[in-house]
Image 1 (tube, rainbow, N blue to C red):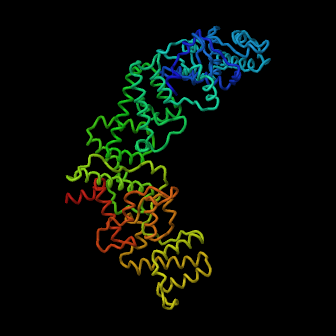
Image 2 (cartoon, one colour; image 1 turned 90 degrees about the vertical axis):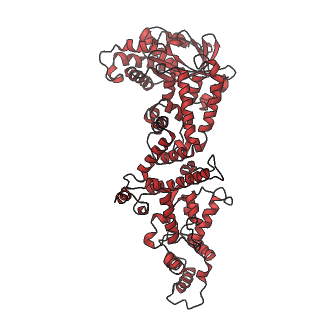
Image 3 (cartoon, rainbow, N blue to C red; image 1 turned 180 degrees about the vertical axis):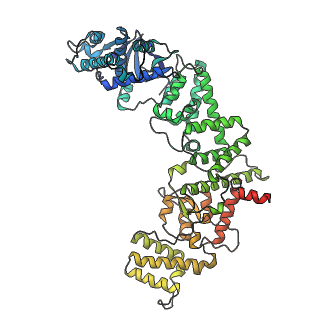
Length: 619
């Protein structure tokens, strides 16, 4: 929407009085069915009973001004005609005037004369399709008030329906009234607008309507604010369109007709997701109503709220903690952020960060009785493990930042790395075993052959054997089972070979340093890894996994294979946790797992000072 070519405004129905609406010949005739008419009447009845709402707002009426008080209708003929019929029934007067261009080209088909005399018709007129639908709509309105009021107006008691509806239609914008969204464009843009409306290319979003309301030349913000507000709106849209900012706050993209800007407006209006789901223009109605502050004050609230959100984004601690909580917490996003901003204003910065940490502790250690070493693939759900491993990544980044900030040498002012929360929603995530599980999950001959090739490339000595292959040693069995598999590449032959290679790797190569089968599900052997990378190397041993992960995260990867690898996952596969000089680089060992667990404990200590430890300290 361009502010120079189009104008969005709200008009009470009574403001349409005395206007003339031209209906172009290319527009279809009136086609509302009794069902459409009844739905409108029911909506108006429900609105009349709602004490907390002063405005019933219809879909946009798109027009072009031809001369003073005369407009060509580009979209909205159906709504204008139905409201005309309702007003005609209630008052026996014409709310406004129609000029039908087709009437000038068709003999004996004066639609305007027909409309003005509609209340005089005694039977259904089916002589022409427009007349049929118009007559049917008028009869539906009349029957609703006179024959079936309880069906259309549930809960009706002693109210005078005609008076009640007439008051709604005659009320000014300051009162409880029926209003239309008035979308006015120029003659130069008329054809393009009509074409776009009919092809669905123009669909006024809630944020479009609010922007139009703010920058309206007649009753929007004071004109001296327009340029500044337009610039600030553009700036805010650009920030909200940054994925890093958006996914700190929300775990999903808005779906049509919702936009990212709507989240900001809905927070300011203190709407609920349920209200917005029912009516996506909820916050627009809040901005348009006069009983909850003037428009300039509302704009100041928008700006203030945005700046609060931006402050949360630019602080590395609040960015990471809110991003973590957003990933975990479902429910009403609008109310959650509204509460966050309230608390941010209420507390000091450190108190607010402490509040966020308390919320996180309630997720990972709700009863203050969990211990990190007890986390496992068996004891915990995938969601619980994802939360713990994600939090380890978050705290690792924060502590790296704090270390550099506190360093006299660097005195880092701003963070140089942030966790990109958007990838949590763009990639699918697995809980990956670092040291491969013993169970074979390779499903076909190609996967099995590729797995053997990777073992041969990474561990060539496993297949070098000059002795008797019929011996009972593991090395002899590898040769024997390999020959069997090459002769007949079936699943049973491969399973024999697979199991003996895994045993040899653990017993002969690693010995006491190998992670036992019953320990492979413990937290010291688990990392967060995207599903694509995890599934790409199947049951590969450590060396092949490391190659795949480093390649997937690096510049050498093709676009379709490049993935985000979380920092702590990368540190596991680059052996960053084990500081011993004799650390084995080609396997994940017990020492590696223990060092990894110790790092998780150290990084997450603020969340796992549990009751047992506190009791021991007291004694």
